[in-house]
Amino acid sequence: MSTPRTRLAGKVVKYGVLIVGAVVATGPILFALYTSFELPADYPRLVSFGRLTLWNYRYVFDNAPVLRWYGNTAFVTFGVIVGAVVVNTLAGYALARIRYPGRTVTFLVVLAILMVPLQAILIPLYLLVAQLGWLNSYQALIIPFIANPFLIFLMRQSFQALPTDLEEAAVIDGAGRFRSFFTIAVPLTMSGIATQALLAGTWTWNAFMIPVTFTTDPNHYMLTVGLNSLQSQFYTLTTVQMAGVVLLTVPIVLMFLVFQRLIVPSFATAGIRG
Amino acid sequence: MWFIYPIVETVILAFQRVNLFHFSQRSYIGLTNFRQLWEDPAFHHSLFITLTFVVLVVPAQTVVALVLASILQSVGFGKTAFRTAFFLPYMTSTVAVTTVFMKLFVEGGPLSTAAARVLGVSNTTWYAYPSYALPFLVIVYVYMYIGLYVVVFMAGIENVPAELYEAAKVDGAGVFQRFRHVTVPSVRPHVFFVVVAGFIQAVQIFDQAYVIASSGAILGSPAGATATLVIFLYQQAFRLNDLGYGSAVAVVLLVIVFFGMALTRRLLPERS
Image 1 (cartoon, chains in turn blue, orange):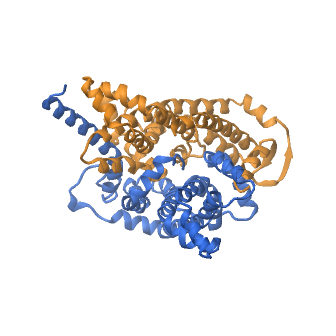
Image 2 (cartoon, one colour):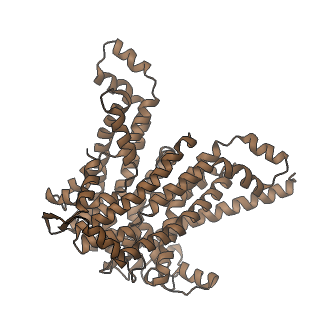
Image 3 (tube, chains in turn orange, yellow):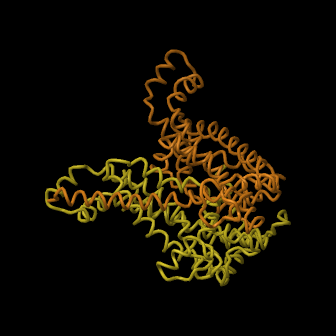
């Protein structure tokens, strides 16, 4: 049996491990944050807070089209989110509620494709985009990524969790399919829809392989690709690169801190993807 | 259709000769691409690199995540805060994380110096030194993914009835015995899931390896030490312009992933 003393010791050890883990997890991010405010000449020494400046941020904005990359990333992310919410919500609803021939087959296909890596279909996607003349365009980064098997699956589960009574009642009251979809089903699955928007947004914001393959013109770069190009451009300027890292990371971290209650469980249940 | 088209197209392309810059001229060449793969030492090398990577990554991330998750579930105060901290790296971009770690593991950098002092390895630029480049990728990768699997395991441990732990305590089981005989058996399906999903995810490693090599002309540098399967695919298709050959590699990747998936599906009933 454990005595109070051993229990205390156990607690100390447990929190010790957790604190080490938390330091390891956040350390590199804090390192980037701190370094991004250091003058290049001061790196890698530690300096007092009084010596920290915005010099790197000014430098990176002056010497690379960072604003443009921000705009591209924001636009593409927004486009994918809007498209994804419309398409995957409708598809999920159809799989959950509408009886049509081949529904089971469709659902099985969606399940089977859940884990097909983007890497394996990159070449045909590239060919398609190239044939359409879409290289270096926004639509190439948006349209192929709207319909997503995982998000369809997520929405199907949300709609299926709803009791059918409400919608049936609405139908008895004379509401059509569309009316009951928009006034009953959609409002009740708002948290599922919000989760979907957050996941699609995170994936698109952080996407790298697709934008680096589909864009060659720096004006069409997304932030991730731009940041990667900074590496060779400012090879010796570590502090400037870290400013780039912070610019890329801050929006997604803020978004995560605000919405983590929605994001974390959705990754935990099935979200082994992306 | 939307989803099936690119998969079917990948398979078709694998039996063709297609050049990146003349992609409208496609000719069937049968199994030539696969025969060439079978004999290509660079392909064998990429399989070997990927296998080594997976063998290093999967056990490490599974064990660490399970231990962290079980500690996290057993403490009362600060659970959410720690979970947030652990999950944070998974939310950040692969490019950002790799860029930061490249600075931490540069010759004379904070972590390479610490590693040299503690482990006695040489203080060098890890991603540019052939025998350190793959371990470097492993560190960057595991750093990002542990948080995800911690959350998966936490969900599993949450479902273990508290009475089991109480009963084990009454029987005099210590912390380690409870972990070994209550936690581990109860979350066995989750362990299996994390191993298989982690495997499927890890064989696709690309971004991190691309980032460390992108200042050079050849992907997979230094000296092919990070030439993973997908890096090999990318190199063939988009640097050497042979889309057919790249697609043959993609088919191999698909087969590997489907193999992993078949294993999960078989275990799915046990999970629910």
